[in-house]
Image (cartoon, rainbow, N blue to C red; front, side):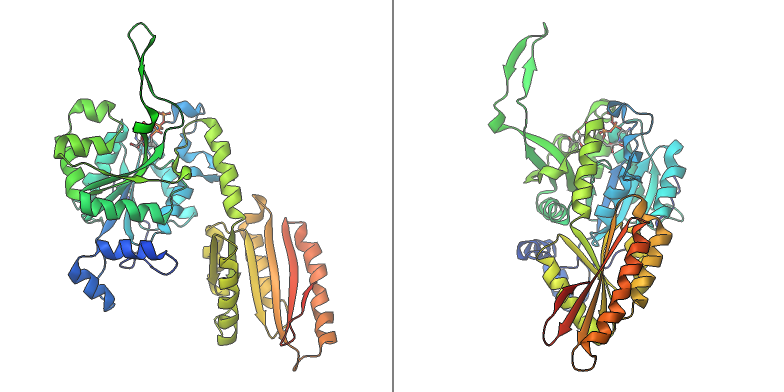
Length: 421
Ligand SMILES: Nc1ccn([C@@H]2O[C@H](COP(=O)(O)OP(=O)(O)OP(=O)(O)O)[C@@H](O)[C@H]2O)c(=O)n1
Ligand SMILES: O=P(O)(O)OC[C@@H](O)[C@@H](O)[C@@H](O)CO
């Protein structure tokens, strides 16, 4: 195992942040906990079953037809694998993420971890086949090595590094199912009918599409089940196999629970998949919003109200104080609301613009910043404040040269005034 460079932070907080997960998912998570754990967690104590992930990323991407292995191909100037890592890192109950990369790509991978400050990452040497890469990842979890923080999990997720669109709900579903059944995997309806050719190259028969499914990722296993399966695995299966669920069945007689996955679980394989991935990422970026505010009580309350309203409209709303801006930049959020309560000055908005400027984020994609000013009409005469706020026009002209679109919103209360500046 490559003495990897764990991504730095310690194991994730125990158990998922259930806030924001639907009721069904909270119930699913609760079902994961044994009685004692559930009791302990209810008392704010113990954590849920330890869950780790193994990401095979040691392929050469031949079908992509480009020199760079597809997991390192850029999308919006950011390597594809970084999006997958970001997706898994958003799931805080995955305590470790083991990535299998070839020796030749180890330094590049370390650079990506550092540039995007990926956490909970450990690197292992990939194998010459996908199964061998996965097996190396499992070994890293099973056999604690000197200087490694890794420990044997109860459940392990296996997910291709080139499947960036994985969400917490499907991960929780496969982990919950694996806890009960020993193995679980995401599936999708077949798009094309599967046929079986005869030796003379003609149709022998076709499969009934309604009785078959496409096996996707993520998959999840009780660690002992899948590790045992790989240890028993024949060289032929390690060399030519493509299905981890089959290994659990063949070597451990464990029948995986099949979980319906979303259309976005597809694997980037051909060049067209990169273009499709870029379109999806752009669409998702437009669905992300970061509310930047101080944690002073009045702003906290206002920011939370704004967050609740935005959450009804957007997929991913993050609220943070101005002190954490660097992290936001690394998450590649492109839309910002800067909350200013009882002030018409632009100090905070200017600070955000400076951070955005230094990050070169706007080179990739237009960045939108809305400077929101909540002003109480009793203490501040309207006219004077509007004069102050008109300065935003000059600031907006300046930052537009750097692909940052700035606009202002004045909310004058208790009479609510929504005026676009
Ligand atoms: N020896 C290998 C081969 C593949 N993979 C990984 O397994 C995942 C799915 O495999 P696939 O899509 O087949 O990737 P490649 O083998 O790179 O693609 P190709 O078959 O086109 O070369 C990818 O994340 C790939 O990096 C791996 O870790 N080790
Ligand atoms: O076969 P490939 O190496 O292209 O990709 C691996 C896929 O087979 C695998 O990710 C899913 O089909 C689920 O096992």
